[in-house]
Image (cartoon, rainbow, N blue to C red):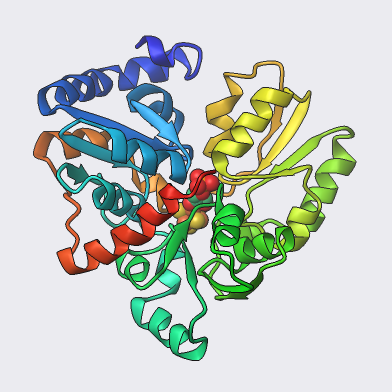
Length: 315
Ligand code: 13P
Ligand code: SF4
């Protein structure tokens, strides 16, 4: 399998080759595309994906694709967003239990209560939420456009849901007042500023880049803060001698082969939800057209508005 040569050891390439060949054949047969988040393992990211990216890029690609079937190699909210943006397509997720601690931290009823508490204050919702929560929101955002989305509203304050750390990061980058919810990501909340300082002490000259879902003291120690694709682009553009990507494990594995001159220090904080997606699961999904993402039409209509409003903001 040419796409994996030099990325995985030869013995692993030989092991996954039959499954990858079957996935390719099924993609042709089903007129399907595989969209993969940057946290997928290298066999999926380099071997099975047709399109890759952060949440914003995946949403745009899902909206634009003419394929009849979209397989989302990512977590459930990403598959729901794809369905919202391209409702005529069949959207599949290999494992429907691939959730997200942020999406689980808030319900539609919570948003309605917040609106009662802060009448007239617009609700900006991170895409890492259910369609039900998006349906109660004015506009969505991702980690790569959150500041621009908040500022696009032209208001003095917003309710920002559900990631308290992304919300605090946004607040530090704008004069708009940000009312927070107490959600957090189980992967990024585990990093500590002390850990970052230890890497700097242990590896003089190391560049430290972080995802904005990390706590504020961690972000204060970073040389760059950005979405998963922002982090990948930063490494490709700056080509540092040594770097640590303060985010999920697979990111470094995926980008390392494209920047061979860079040494990656790799702390491994795994996202258990993302890791539910496997090559075998993708193959099974295509074989049996499962698990299809279905959204209640009344919810979908309102949730779609929040996502399309986000995509209409120039970034
Ligand atoms: P990105 O939009 O930066 O890819 O983030 C998605 C995510 O779930 C990060 O944990
Ligand atoms: Fe959710 Fe965090 Fe996993 Fe991203 S890394 S999907 S925010 S739990």
